[in-house]
Amino acid sequence: MSDADEKKVKRARSSNYTQQEKNLLLNIILRFKHVVESKKTDAVTWRDKNSTWTKIATLFNSQSPTGTYRDVTSLRKVYENVKKTVRKTVSDEKVSFKKTGGGEASFNDDPTIDLALEVINTKTVYGLSNPFDSDCQGDKQEEETVQPYTEESFSCNAENVETVIIRMEDELDTPVDTVDWGDFKVSHLHTPVHSKLKHNSSKAMKTTQLPAEKEFSAATNEPEPSTSTSWSAKRRPITSALASSDISKKYIMLADLKIQIAKHELGQVEISRTRKEQQDKIEFELRKKSLELDIEIKEAILKKIDYLNPSDLISLMK
Image 1 (cartoon, rainbow, N blue to C red):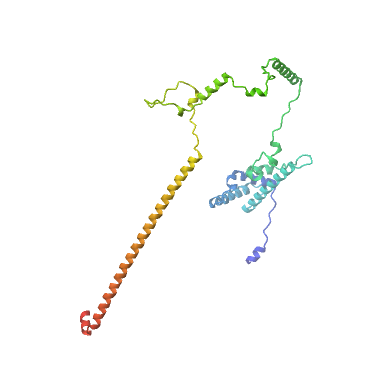
Image 2: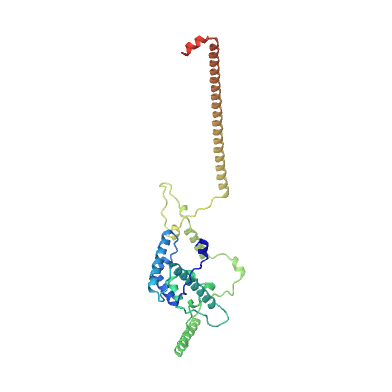
């Protein structure tokens, strides 16, 4: 039989999986879920998965309630179909839970789904939990507990109300110091400041004096001991900002220095360039003279060779 004929031959179809077979398969996979559900894709992981599925097939066929032989390919296909069914069922439950129009949400009570959720990574089914927006599940929200309104609670509330009323009345009875501004006029603002107020302001100015402003004695060049123990002496000295004119002068001086440095560097570069040109010119002249001397020497040798006899040339060559 040729290869084309073999492809045309249909695979022998086995019987459908029963509910007991699916539950048995999921129970066996639950023991090896750390390998079956591993997300690694290296060669070692694939080798472990293949060997694990071979073990699963052996255990399944030894405990099969129907006695039907199932190969590894068939078992893996059924497991993938179960995972697809679980994801579709969970998605339908979410849609049914958020559906408008009233009524109860529909839930699937299939035990295979609960067993499959123990094996499958739940994040691939439910996704990441989000307590906000429309992704929040209503059953996870905290419900407010309403306590029944009894006679005891009514009496407690009444006592609390009475105590609050009594306290408010006591507060109203206490005298409050008020200032009478009835005789005040705008012209009073132009009146001179009271002497007591002037005295307090002068004290405040003394306490806010900076430590840098202490007087030094001319003989010892040491600061005079301070008689005031005010807290203002521990303050940090305030550094005043430089005037814009001082800053501009410093920037101008810095720019002039940079210009001078740049001019000096340019001058040095020009001097080195001229020196290099002079050296190159001298070397060229020396090489030219050496070549001319070589030419003259060779021409003189050739003239002498022309005047010699052939016998003399042979003797010279020997």
